[in-house]
Image 1: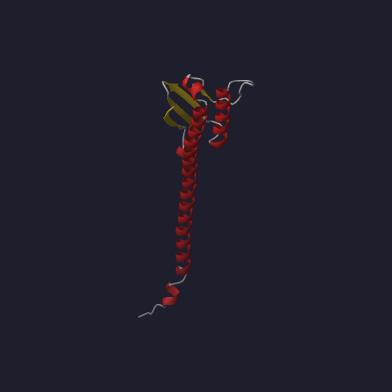
Image 2: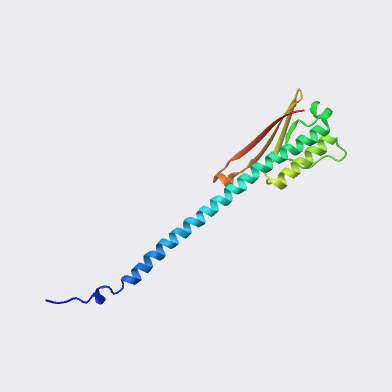
Length: 147
């Protein structure tokens, strides 16, 4: 009977084990990179939503400082334009500054809408959040305040 040497049968097994473990490690690292990418996108989306709320409060404060004009509808309208008219009213100046701040804080796709009726105002901030949702996605944040 022939005795088979255990060293000869084990030749190359260590290398295969190393290659399999390297494959598993590389798959895990790719998964971690994908997870980090998703976390960054979701973090950016959450920051945009937070900034939309903060910016809504900003125009609300400006409207409360100019409450007579706000109740008369001077702030009403929807705009994505930051080109204000020189010598315009305080409300026009506030809206222009607000939309400019929206674009700096959220992105160039940001727009704002204000609609006041009977002392109750709806402030809507809209922007494109397609990076976070992996497709075309318009997000809206609406704040309702009583002046």
